[in-house]
Image (cartoon, rainbow, N blue to C red; front, side, top):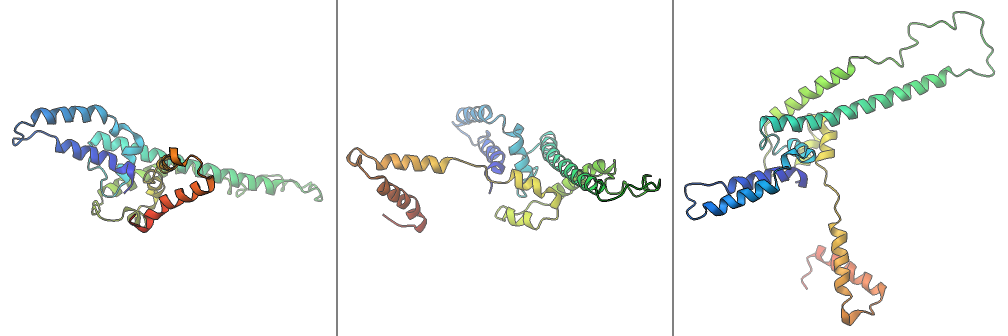
Length: 232
């Protein structure tokens, strides 16, 4: 389960747990204080584009924790990314086609210039390779909107299902680039920070003269021995 996609569901579930009920004898003030603290600290989670897009693209959640307005905002983030990607790909394709056409049109030094007017006139098919339908961008936009709606209409998958396996055989390949972007694990420096902390623990007062080679070996063992479930 990706970290970004679970932030909004976890916050929503926690807020539901601290809602007041008729059985809360003596806990009303405590729950009210918890609700106020959570609303203050997590007020902006549903306005963070990366979090909303990841939640909407998560097959287990989709729009489950969104209002209508929040769902439309999350859809806008995803569709904007996909449209920009389509436009960029189309621009690169047109640039490559135009470059190839220019290459073909370069004059050959060994070729004698023709005096025939037929070779200089523009034929019907001369612009075929560089032609681009002006309405193609609107068609792609409408297709993406329809695909997004069809994806949201599909039932959510089981909570224990593998979302990456679901996306790998998804019937919505047009949405896969957005899924890869927003559902991927964000980079973190936790592992390197933990390694520095472990090195600080190795160089204690009684081991200040520890050789660098030995310290490296001890760090390697301290980190990797846990992978073998070694009890020490």
